Length: 429
Image (cartoon, rainbow, N blue to C red):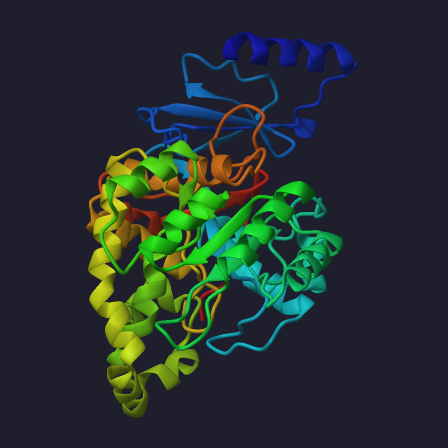
């Protein structure tokens, strides 16, 4: 069927052009690489990825794909292709370097460019989004400017009355968002938690307005109540207790995605000393020594060591990792996300650390790649994204090393493509 489609396209191209011209071909074929399409099936060796005007036309072994005459050929023999990484829980526009409070149009662009250079081709920004971000939503942004695609949640919905909650939802609706988000968390007992009647109102109203709702939560008991109320994604790990059969039954019955954000926990305590990843060249290609200098201050190290929240999150990270393994083994959809884009959660780089931590939790490289591509797109209704398949956007990474052998090989980026166009990398200093 795939072969027939390509042949039909070739006939149309041939018949509609009076004088075919090789230099004006709209097709590009990436040949010779091993392709991981994001769907969880076997990798395709010596493959062909055929794209036209930013979309995938066909993908398969070289014997199954007919390449139209005049197609631009890019030989990638010895390399690996996988779909672009989708961050289902990031933040865009607020952080510059390691400092928040910089929300602006220029910062939205800069953040999206950093994500793109790290192979994160789509970001779902789950909260804190303002009017400046709206023009860059995937649904609105038809231009290509070397930046990740963007979906937004607007303000994180809160309030002390039902009227206040509905008003916040309506403001997001008027802004133009892709998803809604609430917080149901007391920040380890230091703040008030959103009441159950209010988040039920938020969920019902969001669905009435036509949006899915992601719920920031922490406790197992809250996760169960949120699932019963109709939340569409659990936007962090359950960290206070092991997940049980009731939670697993609920989350599977409701077909709700689980977004672990393990690096969120890591970021709370890793700066109690000099972070090991500061010496990683893949990190320093974007984040210079001057940027991270405050995090290497001994006074800052001591402050982190003494912080009760850092101590608590460090202690509960193994619980989060164990819960991830249990839920993945049970067949729960794992939605890849990091909560990066917040100060000291380094956008772009933390996505690769998250993958390493998911592997440490017991997930296989293939499960992690599917989580970061197809599952995110399916669970959050990101149409045309996720898998490399006919009709989808041509967003993909070219890697020098096989990520199925070691998920850390996602760092071996030779090139990033968004909409079939190669992302401009930052020049080395």
